[in-house]
Length: 298
Image 1 (cartoon, rainbow, N blue to C red):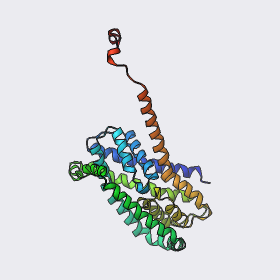
Image 2 (cartoon, helix red, strand yellow):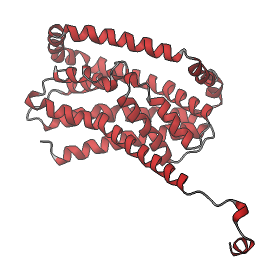
Image 3 (cartoon, one colour):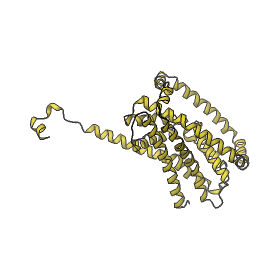
Image 4 (cartoon, rainbow, N blue to C red):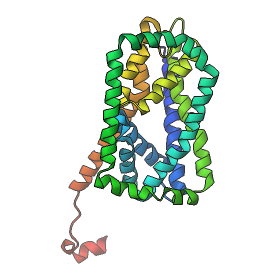
């Protein structure tokens, strides 16, 4: 049973992540002269989080965010460019963080988690083979989808990314980098915090490196949120020996890393859908049915 204080810290980390990413896309859109409120930025990111968590290869995430931008009256071309700039600015930060983590802590992590992961892979080799086959199949399907005529039309605005990159002020791009660090640190820190509920938590190195691997391996795994593979790695000791409470920790870690995004995105989508339906039922009176007396009274 987790202490309430640990839940509060996890909620704070999730809130920091959501706020940092909302500010990041808000500032990038502002650099393209597309003003959105912080609430609109939060909403469109929530759509993307939910879609990423429930679609293979996270393929639904960016289209869902683009739909949120269109709902906020952001032009489609500006939305494409903002998302592309966000990715191009975020990945160097993520790669630098990964290199730093593995250089400082990777050896200790491998000495602790390597034997357990190797044993799990050897005993579950059919799952490893199935994962490779599924990954290749998923990438082939994604590539075929990108080659469709409709997708080629979507790709056309992206060819002007270099032009918009030169027009984008440097400040939003530079400001997005520390926000990406907040995103990485808060998500990786969730497992470190949750593990403090154990009587004897694993060492710092296995927790940090294992958490990093479990989080970012989901970007390349074919199943939604890396379901199955990530869970197997978690239970096989990717973050160290979590003891008998590992199933409970897996549940809460999944809740804070994926479940919160699904709930927020789903609830906000249903709220927006209900609002649109309500607006459709309120039809204005045609102008030719309004009398002159009503016009004078108004």
